[in-house]
Image (cartoon, rainbow, N blue to C red):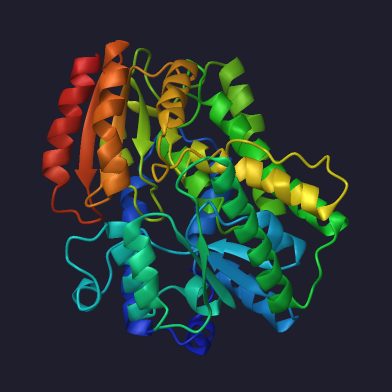
Length: 425
């Protein structure tokens, strides 16, 4: 970083020694993985800059906004409606949970056999290493899986600004009613936090901002379907990750500029991969910054990733909110309809997700699917076998990978992925 943000980090109460260690992990992983790529689109320069300033300039923007009276709301999940956050003129940021940190301390509160993402979220809080978490005026958790549900009970004793949203597990009329009640409760909480009242105009503006972000990401996803592979999966994942914490207008403009470049690359048949390179779809658990382990292994093994069926991927960005209603209640209904369409593994039954994977594989011309599951993530682990059976019945090869954030299994994963890529060849 070119600017010294030490004073700001101190003001946030970060553990500077631990924070420096985290930045070291981020910097090394980024340097080793991203900067070694060949033939990258020049539009990735913006996203490179954002990552280099992930705990610097963007956090300063949040602190400056707070000094002007705006509120910052942090969330861990794609079910938290950013549209409502923006409608009260607050700033919505995704919270860090993509690396192991303070695991010895975490295991004083959570069992060892807990999902890596949950342990990471707890570790970032205990170690005081995440400036987004420490500057948030409200932290929104959500009762998706049982692990998160119980972890938020523990984390609630560590912070006085934790707000927990309940979520339905069944897509029924009762489930829809529950989600609407929770969105209305979140609307009330956001209004109380900011002192703003949401009207039709404000909510439509919030919906438009988020819809535009999703449209830009959908455009990027569609360009990745091209046979010439104009961008790597690693670079696309980076854009998907930055989706969660960058300024929405600036981010949307940057993604569209990148897509403009990719369209020109497609016209000129400029590719990041050789002809006949195996095309892989990754499906399953989210990959937050700096969790680039599996994609780096895949693309260093002679394949190219052409899509992510993930919360940090198409699951988090697909489907727009219908903004045609002329009252707040109607717009809330539209939000509920859009978010209830998310095919997260928490739902039962969840055949929609299998259908969506098939659709993505066909659209992206994938030669195979890697199902990625974090260790001890029961909802996604339980879905891997029936999905594998359905995909392979259609002739689409699959590979099941269970891992965590550590580097200890890198060699084993490399061997398995290389064998899968050879099979696809």
